[in-house]
Image (cartoon, rainbow, N blue to C red; front, side, top):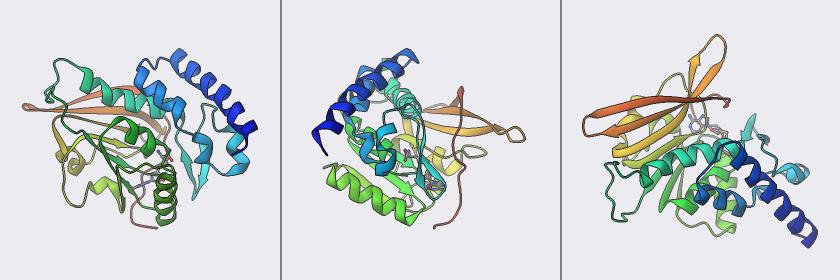
Length: 230
Ligand code: SAH
């Protein structure tokens, strides 16, 4: 990386963080991590100059790197649980684990890895899975486990998670995913709320002793969930 790119990127990163703040992201820890993660290293060189724009960009295989606002918003929704006094999760710092569905280029994976203790990330496209794993290794991110598979079936080892986040839209919240949320934990994912008009919303599922509580958040635009391994 040349000094020139480094400096441009520092200014543009600050501009991006300010934009996200204006859009309503209020978690300082999320904003700090967004400023810190080198998004230009997650897209091909020809797109690097646009890496700090608040937009999705192509990463091949008809997929996109998620828009920074959405990554920030989903992560902030997870952190709300950690900071919430009435949450069922233990207050003493116990390690928090996150399951991510749709590794893609690994951008959100790195954001999560900086904020939580352990991340397990599932991707169905072999080449994206490998490239993201190698990229995050080069970036010295060591607290991530990468799985090639269909993430909407959940973690194949049937582990349970404090947090689950998905980056591809699904017709509903799969029950296997719900079962893998720990009591006190939270899942955030896009769900198709109107199929004919392709309207999607972010859905939050909280798991309590008493059962599941679902809430509907903002309208979003994600690539569709696909099945099988490519
Ligand atoms: N957060 C990622 C988002 C990538 S787009 C990023 O910023 O790069 C969504 C990703 O979900 C794509 O990589 C796509 O291949 C993956 N995906 C779609 N269906 C999937 C499934 N059933 N299991 C795992 N990954 C899936």
